[in-house]
Length: 115
Length: 421
Image 1 (cartoon, rainbow over the protein chains, first blue to last red):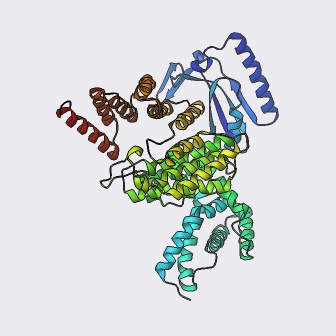
Image 2 (image 1 turned 180 degrees about the vertical axis):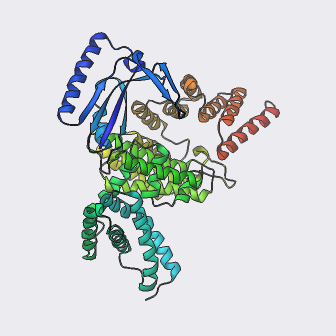
Image 3 (image 1 turned 60 degrees about the vertical axis):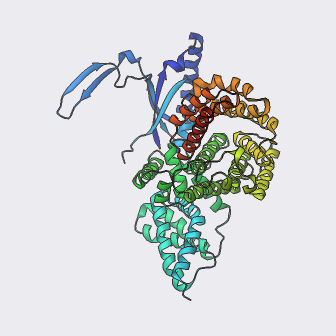
């Protein structure tokens, strides 16, 4: 099954992380990502630019469009990246998310398969 | 040979009570579809009513139902090509069944265990876990689950539908967790079973008999889990805990339905042999030497259960057990209960000193105020005690607890009006 893994950072999680520690975590993530990608468990995904770069486009049924600055949900947690997992079941997806090296919050959702 | 219809009814209900979980589990494993599995069991039950009335009750009713359900499954799926592989499996197992292969083998066992872990998967919410477990493994009908939790039937039905949909759409697997995940996943299962038990044991709303049935259902499910995982000390601990509570059931309520607390319970009403068995069971867990929260809670209840009276209770042992429990589970509620045991060992002043700092975290917990009231009363601070009881009363809706608190407040009032003597 394919799952989207949304990765959100929170200030709480990152409080007290020193720059050196942050650097180490980034290196760790590169290694982690590479390992799962080469094993075929992660088949896509990206890190996103900081939330300050976000733009929200809101569309209504009557065709109206509103463009605003910022993400569509203002919350403590901000989406910082995503990955697409291709695994056997939810437990495998949870197991992968459970080893994510950073103090983030991850949401796992199955994607709707086209066929 | 024709059999009396009502005798068939009774027998069928009893068989389904024990076998339903096993049937569903096996069918879910083969078909991967909960709704179809449930419908097939339903179909098999209808067929049983018919056949058993005319042909008599079969020698092994559980196996009969399994065979019938599988045959119904083959009929139903014959035309659907995507089920072809599964149909082969159904046919093979139905044939083995005819050849007399026992349904009680390890395969049937594993199926139910797998199903239990699926029902209690952490990605399902608590209500869904409880409803699924009771409905699927416990064999309770939807209305019975609804009555147990005092929610409308439609709500339970909705929870079940949503939970089953999530299992399917989110890809929640149907298997026993890997060793690395097992401790946390087993803990999740035990918590669900304990919640079901407490709903029956602690809640005093609803019919008493039904509450007791629910507590017994939880006990039954836990004993099933122990049969499936005989070497897990926390499973033993939880089962012992439930049995120790059930052994004191008769003494817990007065004739008017109000709650009787342990110090005031008539200990001759306690089921001594059940207590002895549970204590022995707990000893089995202790020998595995992997202590845990349920084993410790059971040990605390056991210390009460074996004491000849409230006064002659081994408070030193109980305080020590609470210390251990607090190390594993450092929650304010555990600290509160430890303080109450301390009051018996070292007096109310020592306990109050431990209780007061918990106010920040337990301020909205009625039992915190009720416990504090009791300690204040014993310290000779009647006015403060009364205020604390009143605060506790504001915070609980439980009728039996309210009755108890109201009685205490009334009593305090009459003592005061009688004046100091």
